[in-house]
Image (cartoon, rainbow, N blue to C red; front, side, top):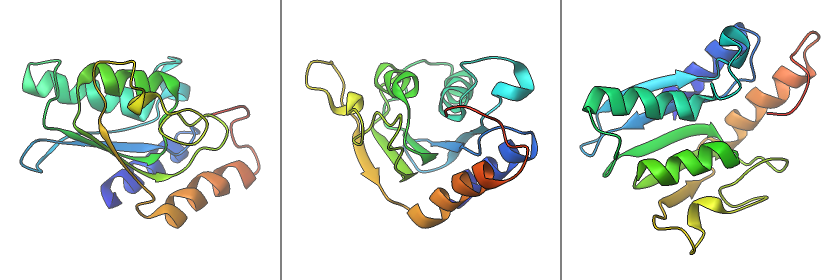
Amino acid sequence: MRLAVAEAARAALGGDVPVGAVVLGPGGAVLSTAHNERELTGDPTAHAEVLALRRAAAKLGEWRLTGCTLVVTLEPCTMCAGALVLSRVDRVVYGARDDKAGAAGSVWDLVRDRRLNHRPEVILGVLEDECSEQVSAFFRSPGSAPGAL
């Protein structure tokens, strides 16, 4: 999670919501890292989780990320939760809950929806205070990006 927090700080430096993500391979090695790049790229899908999944899949040469773990500083939104299910990651670890748009247990629980064909394990609250403060500080600062995560 510390690596994801560092990635989130990079997003904030670029004027984006500070969310960072890391994909770990089956043996625990880092496959990819990413942070939000929506402002940088103008791409509404450039969330940390999606970018980290894309990079991990490219590194493995396989879209199925079976045995992998995604670590992210903020609870995934519905788009990212859908990508996690479709990528077949085994585990999602997140820091702060997102009570406005979270889709891994708070507002929705898409990743564990019994109607879907894959349900990753969810571990929440890792470095929760630090991850939550990172996002809160961003929105408290003058000139922060407006709008939802």
